[in-house]
Length: 169
Image 1 (tube, rainbow, N blue to C red):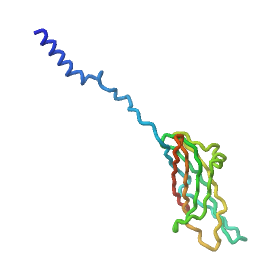
Image 2 (spheres, one colour; image 1 turned 135 degrees about the vertical axis):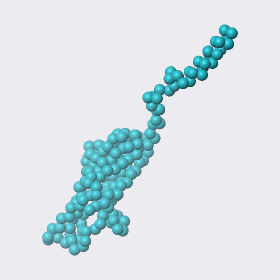
Image 3 (tube, helix red, strand yellow; image 1 turned 90 degrees about the horizontal axis):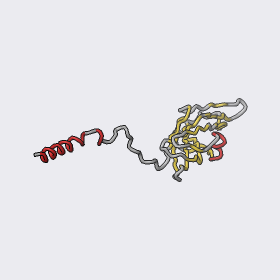
Image 4 (spheres, rainbow, N blue to C red; image 1 turned 180 degrees about the vertical axis):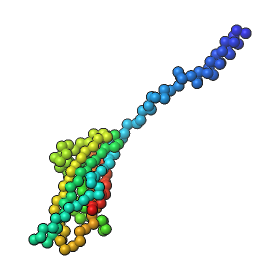
């Protein structure tokens, strides 16, 4: 009888133990996430939409447009890297044709921002100033969009590119 009582007590204990917190996984322990494999970019522009300032000298047959903005490049994938270039392409908003492009090289970005590096989950702000875009003074001002394209080589050797279109008013 003693053996069956011990066996019964052991079976009862075995049935209860799986519900005991001691043997359960701690719910506050986070599950490790896999490390990121590539950088990811986001681009913000201020102001958005961009505002163009037109200057039309009286003795000239042209008006000249200027843009001043701040472009912030954010790394959102968890892998840092080096910005190799940023292109600003003015496009005719109706026809989509490229009118002109301003290219900032890695060295240009370093000169304007102090660095061309973005740390993982970090940001880099660049302030491109475009001055003197000519338009015949007797023609209506063009409707323009600016396409901003950023290229970055991340710390794992991946080439990452991101583009954003911003209207100009």
